Length: 345
Image (tube, one colour):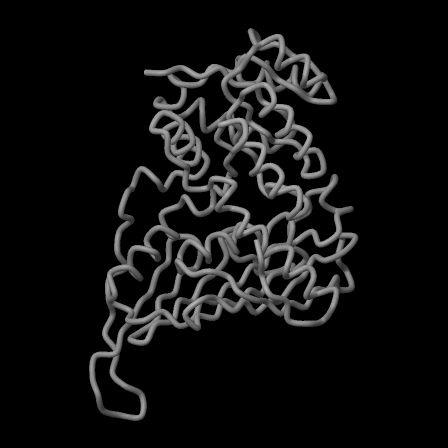
């Protein structure tokens, strides 16, 4: 078993999910040795080291110095989005494979640049789209592939969560689209297997919002083969939270599948040819094709390591994930211009 030396850049709250996945997954724990912790606030790195028993790891606020001193194989990029391009670029210059938090960049130009840098360095650069690695998303994809719902025509998603983070998110522009909607948009792209073509989006920040801007977005995406994807989202809707994974309605030519984003599934298909409303029969939602790919962060990390060893792109490689990022930035441009925007990665 290959053991990889890893540096973790960014020791804020998000880093705990990564380290917890490594600590609780034997097949990761035996393959990853965290040799360095980087944060502009060294005290945050020291607290993380103590919490996860990483007291042997070097702590250094200067990433370049830490990479030179520890010579890692991997960099886990968990910094705020504005710092992402510099961190990933530095890691690639030092010959590291990089797994980044989402979004992969704060602009499409930066995203394309990172893809080019990874290609030139001969290294893997992938993005943690952990919410596509859960059982519900995988089950929907498998059910669609079985053909039982007929031809896919529409995907509809609702995301309503009153989340009080504090910190940088509450000062961000386009906070819902940039920081959260990317999860649902990426999952919709994966579930449908379609290419995003265009979008019309309306963005707002209602009275009572504790965010600076853009806590609400409603978008209609045109996908390939005539499929429509709609997204209704809010990070400032109190009183009836959906799942973090949204609530889904998948419409096919023969029936519809509903998922609440947690444990509740319901699916029915047409079972007769007569009547104002055709008779329906319930169907079972398929199990995931590969249960090993349903464990969120752990599955992303395993896919990342396996891809390095196999010499193949991981599922969320930057060169593919930029298509999800393109959906976000097209939605933002549509909201600004109040026009339909074509999506180009």
